Amino acid sequence: MAAKIIDGKQIAADIRVEIKQEVEKLRQRGIVPGLGVILVGDDPASQSYVTAKERTCEEMGIYSDDNRLPEDVTQQELMALVEKMNNDPKINGILVQLPLPKHLNEAEVLLAIDPDKDVDGFHPMNIGKMVAGEKAFMPCTPHGIIHLLKRSGVKIEGAEVVVVGRSTIVGKPIANMLIQKNDSGNATVTVCHTRTKNLADHTRRADIIIAAAGRPNTITADMVKEGVVVIDVGVNRVEDATKKRGYRLAGDVDFEAVKEKASLITPVPGGVGPMTISMLMFNTMESAKAAAKAKA
Ligand code: NAP
Image (cartoon, rainbow, N blue to C red; front, side, top):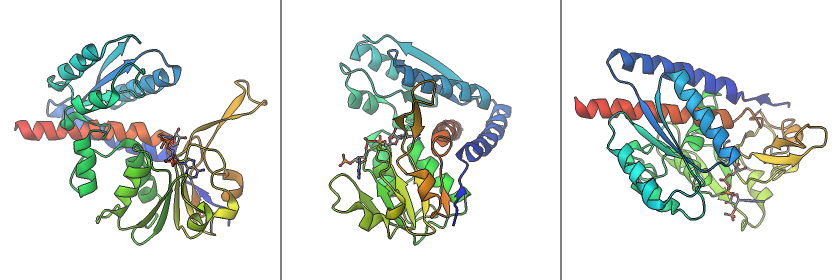
């Protein structure tokens, strides 16, 4: 069976159309969602992520307050800016682009963000609420994965899901979302990592595999069953002399071989990646709605 490709670009674009419409409705009520963005230093990858986020805000009609700070900014200065945004009614979401330079205390900065403006969903308060099954900001990449599955008609309830990776930003939250007793959950989830004894023993019985290891070819065709749904979160640079820049982007899955056995599969790029920014916009819009409701 050759798999149907899950078109993340299209699904992300559909979500953006919906967000834009919602933002327009809010604008008619005098509410403009706002995102405060903080980028420290000049790492090219972080700069291009932040530029993409700012561009998407503009497209959506979301106000964006961009703050690009020098590499040598102090912890105090950074904390003061977070505090200013916490108190700014025009800002509904605060995004601190990670990783921060080594001299800064990342955990302290994330903890300082008002949980009601934590649109990245990294504050312990939101993580705790998510685990408890309460309403919370969902971290953007795993939330995007849930949308990819649901909008592709994948039945999550009762499915055997194997998550490869246990990071705080992908593996742990997606596993948690999928075990919740709600219409995005009710799956039976196994989480694998580098100490898992035989990864293939787990992946072979999976109805859905979520690969977030950050290593190319972690999932090969012999490790999956016929008809599996594969979500490839990995973004890896693989040397490729045929490319001008000397490399190409690849996921964690041997895409060409696995797609012959899978029923549905995400490509890299063009799968999970485009969803992340859409979900950030979604969280910012939801935050603006909640703030307006609290004020009314
Ligand atoms: P991470 O923090 O490096 O975590 C990787 C996880 O995978 C770890 O838990 C590690 O296990 C596990 N792992 C690594 N190699 C493995 C193997 N051979 N077998 C089983 N488990 C293995 O990475 P991350 O931040 O979660 O990101 C994962 C990938 O997703 C990266 O390629 C990243 O670039 C990509 N990503 C993409 C997006 C997007 O928007 N598309 C967003 C976030 C991340 P241990 O815990 O035992 O070390």
